[in-house]
Length: 507
Ligand SMILES: O=P(O)(O)OC[C@H]1O[C@H](O)[C@H](O)[C@@H](O)[C@@H]1O
Image 1 (cartoon, rainbow, N blue to C red):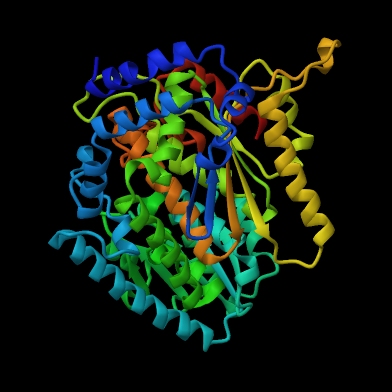
Image 2: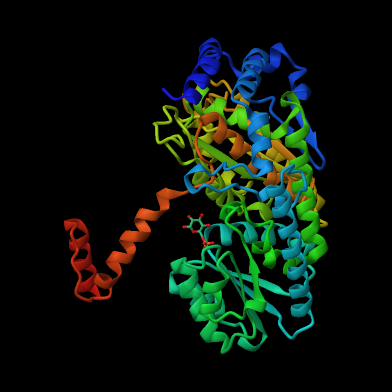
């Protein structure tokens, strides 16, 4: 058994057994103070864990586990640029994009490179602002799309209004076809965002944009591979850097966030970084017992390994955060979807939960039935915003009362003689409350999740920064492409052969 798995089992199993019949209502009833003692604030972000299914004894065991697993040292290693991504022999220095907390030359150098790239990006924002361009199309996928797309959408109240920002992602030509309709090529600029500049979707869509724009004048790129971007036809003067020491899904703080800077201006972008930097300083400096990302990660492993819960829902009660579940699906599931240790040994522990979710209140009218009365218990992160950016006070009161009501109903349940109308309750949740949705608070929220994910990976003994699982499908797709086009090709798999015949017959 892996050392991490043994540690986890020893720490969690006795308390999970002891608390098997304890209910959230019982925990709160026995210790009403936990409503406030199990909460933490970091700047504009407040978190309440009172409705998690651990008591103070189990929490003490979780904190002991955090010490034993070396979370403080692991954080230091992350910030200092140690090779935390062992399979690729790379550091993961996304923190250096926004903080100067790394104490090594490697981390300091990364921070300096990030600053230099940011000033080039600021000059490019100014140049575009001074031009006739009205629309920006960000072409990218995965980490080169989800983060910028989330932030641009979430911060619509902070948009300068200078540009309309669009995102083109899917290799499905329908995406490009509909996205470009109604846009004027003479007033549109494209940003091709690809760390590798080798991603099929982005290269195909990038080629569509390059042709559609009719020249390279308004073609920009963000990439760690400047040569490839140049060979593609982007003037190197308009290529912003990326580095192999930043993972794609951790990269919105780099020039990958160019579209964010165009939407909210450089000041807004700096505020986003400052919010993340606040969380960086907190995770690094706060004691384990008062450390928000640590507690968030401990709650996650408690739910996954102590209670054995296989999925996790993210439920933002704010339409502007509707893309957060999709963003977190990549951050969490690509980072933690591993079953071996960096040594190639079995992890021997359940790792990533299936992450899903959607915005409230809409989701209440679709899948919440299953959360309340389904056979699976789904732990959830509810996210609310205290102060809205619109004048509809009645709507906002309704939104917040629904948010509070759902967390209460899920935790407390409801007894009824009629079994159909009975609510089992005891469904754990964490409530995250942002004072307002601003660049700073959003930066802090995203950084909270980044750190929580890394800490979970340390507790599970897996690498959060590689993603070998996405390669096989890409390779097979490349091999099948000629056959799909009707060119002569040898297809080994009999099912795929039959499916190709079916497609060919219906063309
Ligand atoms: O930025 P790129 O190199 O184009 O990569 C885009 C995305 O594709 C890959 O398949 C990975 O799964 C993602 O982690 C990555 O963000």
